[in-house]
Length: 300
Image (cartoon, rainbow, N blue to C red; front, side, top):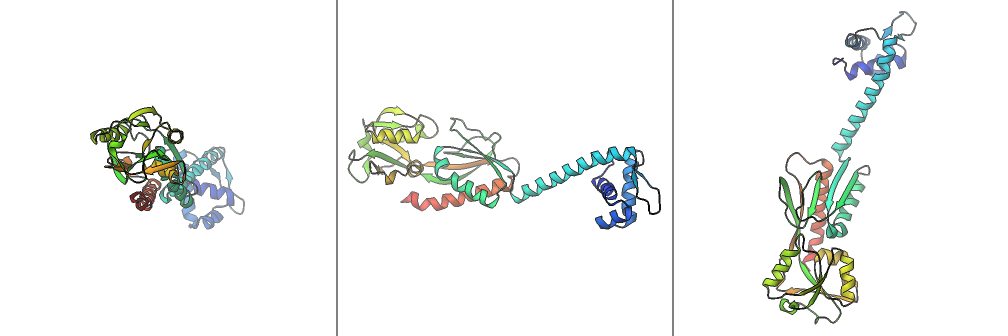
C-alpha cells in the first residue's frame, strides 16, 4: 500500500465521476494511456482490480475492492487538499501565532500590531497571553514581548527605550522637572518588585532618594486612582503613562525626574532555533514600525 500515490487516486476518482477513461483523461489534461497507466499502478498497489472494464460504449464499473478504495481514496485526497491549502496559507502569512505580552505593550503597541496583521491576513489566528513572570521563558510562544532581555536560546530585538516619569496629583510638586532627592521619604504607590521594578527602585536609591512605598499593585488603573486620591505619587514608564492617557487628566501631573532612572528596554523575543513563520516575521516587522512611530513621542 505504500506504492499508492495521490495521482493514482485522482485518476480513479476522475474515471468514476466521468464514466470513462477517455473523459477522465480530458478532464485531467492527460492522454488516455496515462490515465490507464495510473489506474493500473493503483491496482498493482492494492493487489486487485478496481474497475470492471466491459469494453465498447458501456461505462466502467467499480469492483467491490474499487468501492473500498474509492471511499478511502476520496478521504485521502480531501486531506491532501486541506494540507496543501494550509501550507499555502502558511506561506502567505495566515495560520496561527502565539504572542506573550505584558500590560504596557498590551495597551499601546500590541493593538496596532494585531490590527495590521488582521487587516493583511483576515484568516489568521492570533493568540495572546499576558503575564510578567520573574524568569520568563519563550516556551511554545512564537513571539514574546518583555521589558528587558530574557535568558535562553532566543533572538532579541530592542524596540524602544521606555523612560520613567513621575506621576503625581495636582500641586504635589512644582511644575516642571522634579529633582530626584524630592522623592526621599515621599509616599509612593508602585508596581510589585518583579521585572524591571527592582532595578528602577535601586537606581532611585543610588540617586539619594528612598521613597516610602505605601501600596503595591500590578494594575496601572489602580495605581493612578490612588495617585488621584492623594495616597502618593508613582514612578511609571512612559508606555504606562501614555496608555492610560494621563496627560489629558486634569487631576494628575506628569514630571520628568532629574536625574532620571535608566529607561527600561522594551524587547521582542523569538526562538533562535528554527525559522519564524511568515506571519510571525510580519508581526516583528509591524512591531518595529509601531515602535518607530512612537519613538518621537517618547523622546518628547
